[in-house]
Image (cartoon, rainbow, N blue to C red):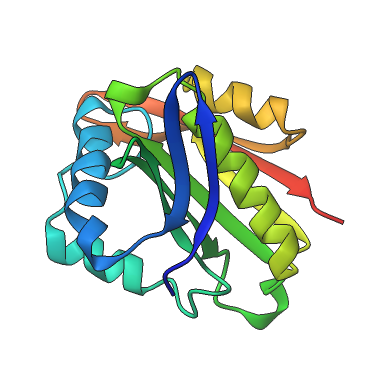
Length: 178
């Protein structure tokens, strides 16, 4: 797959959402590791290497059902997102879990909103019935996006993740796509 899904001009910049390619793996790894180091948006505690992120991208199979996309600003990869299998058991096949990460240099510029909108549109187009997302409860930006897009919090697990000497609560969100 090598498809461009959307291109828009915003405040003089060109923003593109397209399929992730092998050439994007360095940027995907860099952005993900930034999230690991900063904390608060992934339960990974140590940075991932290129081969580990490649394996993660390739685990999204088939890609027409479990896409991985990047968002570019003026030709530079500024974030990435994916739809993933929720559970390996067949009875859960109509549910997808999504995730998204934005380079901290592009925070608060609407890229997360664009990625979540794209993920929800793609999930509907593919035929998923429910979308779920796991968010650290103190992640105000992602919590605001869940609320903005009409997700409902269906679970809360206090002190679920240990990050050094700090515990993080986890909120579980879902949206009915029917």
